[in-house]
Image (cartoon, rainbow, N blue to C red; front, side):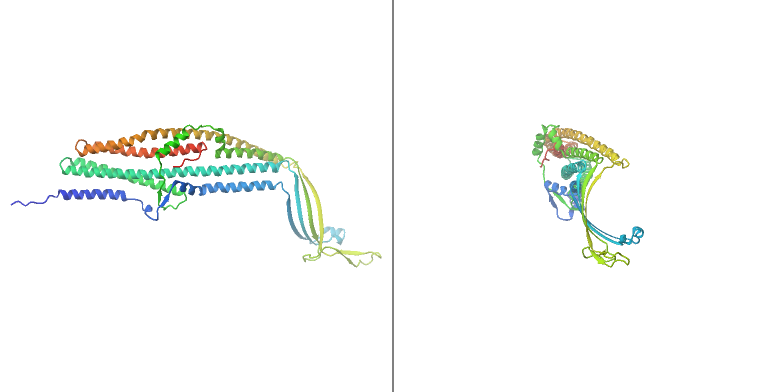
Length: 480
C-alpha cells in the first residue's frame, strides 16, 4: 500500500517568494525616521532661492552696506556748520587773585550757558575727499550685496541640484533592486522546473544582497544633500522636503548652447561683475583717502560765534533773574558823592567772535606716518583691483572649460541609456527562454544602472556648469 504525500515544492517556492518580497520591502521601506514626521514642504527652486537670499550671508552684506551708508553722512558732516549748547557750574574755594588784588575778584560761584556756532572755512579738501572715499566704499558695499546674493543663489542652486540628483539616484537604486529581486524569483522558478541550477539561484541572491549597501549609501547621500539645502534655505533640520522643480534636458542643452558663443573677455561685462566693481571702487576710495590724508598737513580755518550768559551768585542758589548792578552803601571812608554798586547774581550776556587758524607744524610725525599708511593701503587696493579682474577672467575661462566638458558628456550619455535599456531587455528575454546566461543579465543590468546614473548626473552637471558660466560672465542665472 502506497501513501501518496502531497509535494512540498509549491509551499517551498511560496515561502521563498515571501522571503524575497520581505527582503526587498525591508530594503525599500528603510527610510530615515526624520523624513516621516511633519508635513512635506513642496519646495520649487525659485522659492529655495528666495529663502536663501533672506539668510545670514546676504544679511551680513546688507548690514555692511548700512554701515557704509552711515559713514558717508559722517564724512559730509565734517564740512557742515555745527551748533553746540553747553552749560557749566564752578565753585572756587580759595581765590588767589582776590587775596592779592581785592575782593572784587572774589566770585566763588560761576554759572555759564552758551551756544557755539562753528563754521569751517578751509580744511585743505579733507572733507571733500573723505566724502568721496566714503561714497566709493558705500558703492563697493552695494556691489558686494549683489555679489553675496549671486553667490548664495549659486550655492543654493548647487545644493538643490545635488539633492535632486541624490533623490533620483535613490530611485535608480530602488528600481535596480526590484529588478534584481525579479531575477531571483526567475532563477528559483527555473530551478524548480529543472531548467536552472542551485548555483544560479545563489548567484542571483548574492547579487541582490550586494545592491542593498549601495541603496543605503544613496539614501544617506540624499539625506546629507537635503540637510545642506535646508541649511542654505534656513528651514528647520527636520522639515521633510519635496523638490518640485524638474530639469528639462532639452532646455538645459539650449541654455548651454546660448552661452557657448559668449565672449570670455568683455570689458563692460567684466567691470560690471560685483567682485571686480567692488575692488575697483575700493581702489578709488583708497585714492580719495590718500588725498584726504595729504590735507591733514595743511592749515585749517574756522569761525566760531559764541552766544551765552554767565552768572556769579554769592550763594549756591540757581540764578533766575537777569543780571544787573544794585546800588549799595559804600565802605566807610569813601569819597563824598561816590556811588557803589554790586552785581545781583543774575545772568549777564556774553558774546564773542573767534577766527581760528590751526596748522600742525609738529605733531611727532603722526600726520606723515598716517599718510604713509594710507598710501600703502591705497597701493594694496589698486593691486587687489587688478587681481580681482584677473581672477574674474580666469574664473570665466575655467567655467567655460567645465561647461564644454559637461556638454560633451551630456551628448555622449543621452543615447547610451536607450541602448542600455534595449540590451537589458534582450538579455532578460534570452535568459527567460534559456538562450542566455545569468551573467549576461547581470552585466546588462549593471550597464543600465551606470547609464541611468550617468544620464542623471550629466544633466545636472551641465545645468550647474551653465549657471557657473553665466555667473562668471555677469549673465542672469538660467532657470529650469
